[in-house]
Length: 362
Image (tube, rainbow, N blue to C red; front, side, top):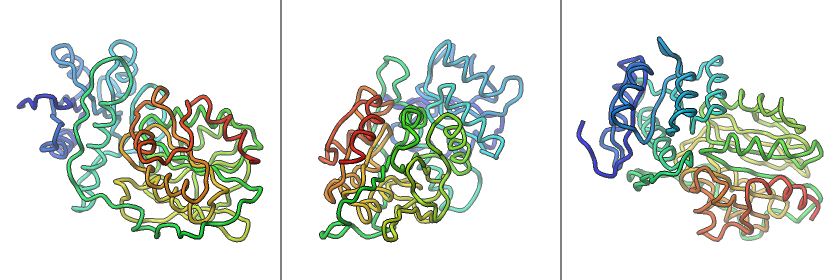
């Protein structure tokens, strides 16, 4: 394969020739990305890595001779390379995907399949974004390339709800709601924050960029580790103290209010800021209905999803916080929010839970 100088070199490891071809076609022609090679199993991949080290590996889980999870653990122990796990994510496989993130995978994405033109376009954006984010992940000290994303239409939160009005959402009350947005590196970062919250913590709503059917497993795992209740959000769920609602993969989540009650609306819609769920959609909805009662936190992740929404929350009187560069896996989303002037505070990961508790009664 021809070499693009300075490009992110990708090794695709999957036992299906059709999948290898599909992912190769999705990546081919993307500026700044080069498919270095493909491999039918981890042994072939390991042999190739001995001669040329890729910048990113796209790795299947279920393969002959050696499963992808075992290979991932070997990579992380011997020669850390950013790995994006590409899985079909059946209900059983989604548990394996959670194990992959815990073992060091940068991201887990849904395996592309033959489908409609719209599905293939969304798959291209998903795979390319995952590769670019993985190339910037802080696994080891080495130069990484971060070419600009390919130009493609990117919808904003206007497609889901209008901008907040100038009059403000509502007066400050005693109830607080915390809105968190995260992407690459966010699964383990969220665990650290939520594990530190007591059962009396204010209600939390979370958008973590994550594939469909994977968020339920992620929520169950966090629920087993945390004092707060953690669940995948369903339409109409009430936001309560001591409860964390995580947006389901492939569905947008909006914060709504009926009187003094906050609840979530889970709905379909186009990709917003190239994501579904989108942090910008959640943050804008919080600006609409919570205003000064909200706390907005933007965490590690690639791209700019959430930055404009955080600014809208700030403009409506919310406390807004960006995770600092040192503690981010990928300093993309928080950096953009800081550049926009959307963050009232910039804080390390370890200080976020304490700040949530400190300001719950301000």
